[in-house]
Amino acid sequence: MDISDEQIAKLVQNGDSDAFGELITRYESKLKRYARKFLNTDDEIDDLVQDVFIKSYTNIQSFNTELRFSPWIYRIAHNTFVNELKRKSKHSMHLFDIDTILPFAAAEETTDGELLEEELRSEIEAHIQDLQPKYREVIVLHYFESLSYKEISDVLQIPVSTVGVRMSRARKKLKENYKHND
Image 1 (cartoon, rainbow, N blue to C red):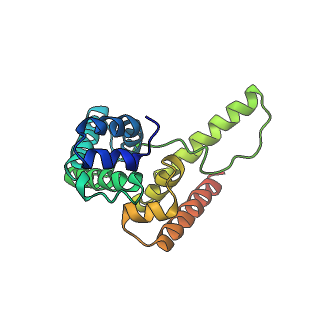
Image 2: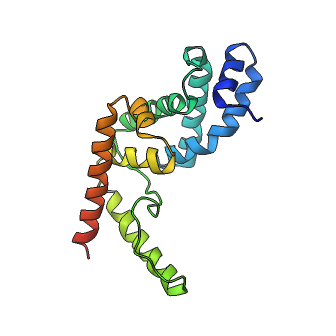
């Protein structure tokens, strides 16, 4: 389909329940990737992403089609995943690929360069665990889910300025942790 997410949501609101399948197709892998930043097992992730779609479908009438759909569904996902973490009362998060978050020093395009990049990525990933969830989350939403600061603000229900502060602190903490282990 060459129509926007918002147009599809409008179709669903108007009774075309089959159109919701297109939203699932567009968002399933994105939401699973987002869930992996919070949760451990694929079975758990599959179940929770399914819950996100059920909640989205159930509440689609409350979606304002004049706004972007992605922050709305990510807000539902965020709440679902955080509630699961609270339920489990443990905050184990999977590491994510850091190579787009912090720039690496330019390395020659050789096997040695690739090895160096792998070593740097592994080293940086080790430090992500040290970030508080509120800092980890803004990085995931911005760099991996391509949400703007405004959209992250909507998802997390915090001011845009707070998103910027958290992003800055997260980057600073990652760089400090990396330098301390040189």
